[in-house]
Length: 197
Image (cartoon, rainbow, N blue to C red):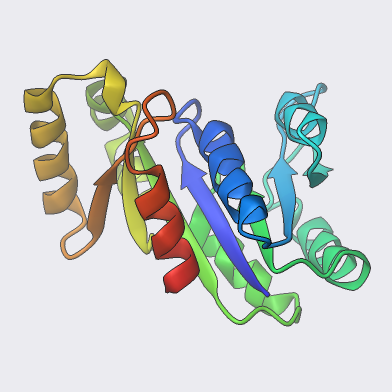
């Protein structure tokens, strides 16, 4: 069993990508459990995932890398004991730092062979996010094993090249994959990278 953390700013497409990854895994005979960190009273992401037939556990009202750290660890142990999936996909809130979540996964003492972090950058709001939250954005993505530029169907080739260049200078040495949930560009490559690492 291993864990995959999908991190990124609010609205960057984490749930949509999670569903694509989980679907590809399930079609390959890989069992998947999903842990979603919701903010607010209504667990929209968790409800969407459960409606698709996945084992989804929701951790509401708090950030799993701070106020819900004990809850996350208990949830991981319960998933391991009750479901024992091949992969646990964790979608933290858009305010979380994925490397902190990774630390909590390791502390939880579940039998996870490895933890893989996928960092998302929203092509549509890239300039806005970098302008207003640059330091947080860098910290959120710095420990990612791969970086995905999401919503590439909403930007031009020139914009994508510019975003790729900026991300590459912020996070040198990281592989950057353009993805689109609409065209499914980059989805198979992303799943291969997650499963083959």
